[in-house]
Amino acid sequence: MAPESNVASGVRERMRVVDAGDQAFTIVLGERIAPEVVATVTALDRQIAALHQTGTLPGLIETVPTFCSLTVIYDPLQASRRQLLAEIARLPPADTHVASSASRRWRLPVCYEGDCGPDLEATAAALGMSVQALIAQHQQSEYCVYMLGFLPGFPFMGDVPSALQLPRRSEPRLRVPPGSVAIAGALTAIYPSESPGGWHLLGQCAVPLFDPERPKPSLLQAGDRVCFAAVDAAEHTRLQQAAKARALDPAAFLDAEVAS
View 1 (cartoon, rainbow, N blue to C red):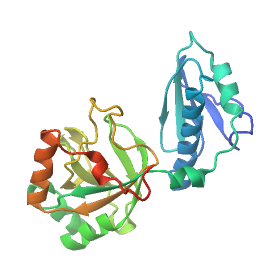
View 2: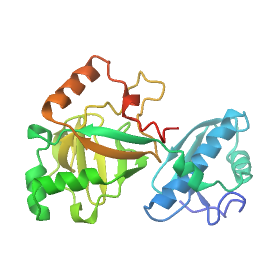
View 3: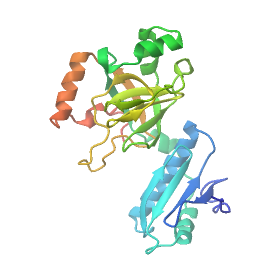
């Protein structure tokens, strides 16, 4: 896909647009995975959402943020690509610091015990550390949700401490249980549903990450921050049962001091 000329500099310096079919275009805002790039993507995404709420962007269907870009999907029968880009180009530069500070912070429970972490021992051995040290380092970090993808609600989060970084498994599993907390390279993630997967499984989170019956089905959003808190097997079972009975309120795991 050949890039277009830069959009008006009022929005972002070095912002470029590439084709994504006849109903979408992608605004590229960076070339690497980094917190400052995702902050820029998140800020523009929020600006476009606010503009859409005013009725200024007819035809806009949705936006899809990624590590370094934002894809805009629209109905070409209601608006042209040129019209949408013209409106977006008029947006002033966003304060990425304000956008970042307004992001939600989650403290999600993870059980690292028993069958919940089938790769814990092998991963610790490969890293040359104890299982306890691996668990401690994994939950000491605060992770940024860079993007959602692969599965509905699947969060790609970083950055994993360098001491914990390993390539993906040489043989992916055919079935990874829902709720599995995993690492691969510089990223960590939670599988929202059962699927194949090649990441190293360290634990289980009982909080449902995707629920089509919620107003916003995906619990996490790009730009959110996530911390992990270890829970024992008994507490994990209690949380699982509450989630199954639809009696588990995800808002209980939001940090009230920074929640937007």
